[in-house]
Image (cartoon, rainbow, N blue to C red; front, top):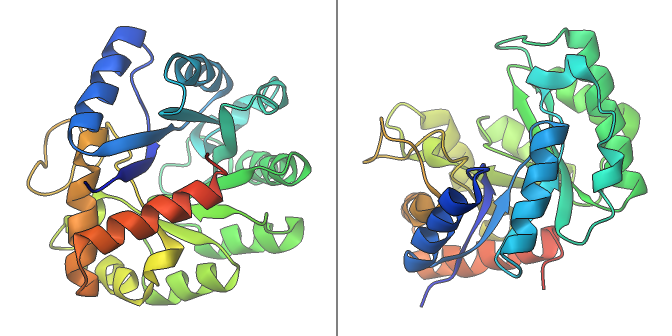
Length: 251
């Protein structure tokens, strides 16, 4: 049976609803999930959720660029728990600019430093800010294990990320007919340097557009990657499973 990991989702914080999501994912062959914090309270909630699903759910702890204006007080306190496998998602979002850009840069840089000092993976969100993202990483130093979540660049950005030693995480956007640059990037990315994610409840893949996304649909993303790479879905599942395992140091 194919084993999949959804390496980036946002589970319901309510324990009962999250348990339903986890069970539905397992039925679809999605055996492991990384639930990703976007602010300190949510990160703390996800730590508790991961504890309720040992060996199945792991958490990240981070402050999204939308929330950068609030700073990162309390974030470091969450990082030494074994259920927390990464810092993030963090980065720069110049599309919405919901926090001032200076605050976004400062909070991104601070989280890079935390990932490095705690020897954790770093999960990056970047939107309409490629140049600035690369500039901050160059100034701060790229953590050994870095993920560009919901990668939306083209082949040039993909190659630059790969040159940094990062892995690319592809979401349901890769199934959108209009996403030709992203699909070209997925073709040039080695299968052992990629991950697959849902970003649930956002970005449901075709044919589920318009519905709340769910971790159970990560095989749809994997099938799209397989078609673009002209390989079998079994190979994508096995490769992304192993890359997620090593990137997040899962058992």
